[in-house]
Length: 127
Image (cartoon, rainbow, N blue to C red; front, side, top):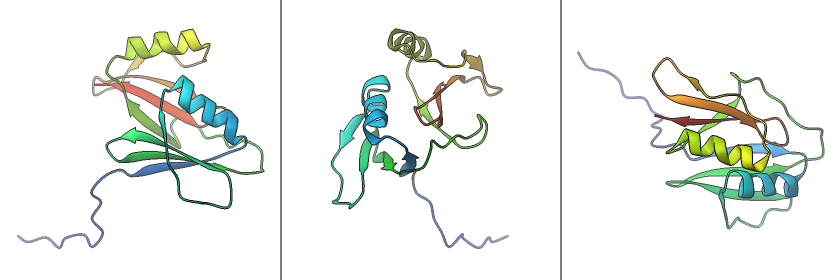
């Protein structure tokens, strides 16, 4: 049996783009709370900040004038794999960041959720 190959081949996750209400506040959160490294950006004519997520994956923050965006926990979110979920939890506690308690996923991964200043959900997970 032969199968037709999909014409669109996805090779890797590249980036997540989030619209944020306060670019500086969000930059501070991603740089200091999540300890992401800011990376150079092209010359846009609107406020943008980019962060490395490792392995050529990026987070793009895009400034906007509207009020904050909010998504449901199981709706729009992105996940970051951590090497030690308990260490990550201690860091969040030290930073005074609210988060949902660690829980076990059906596949055995441990996860917790937090939100950025605009209410975007972020999953931290350990396999």
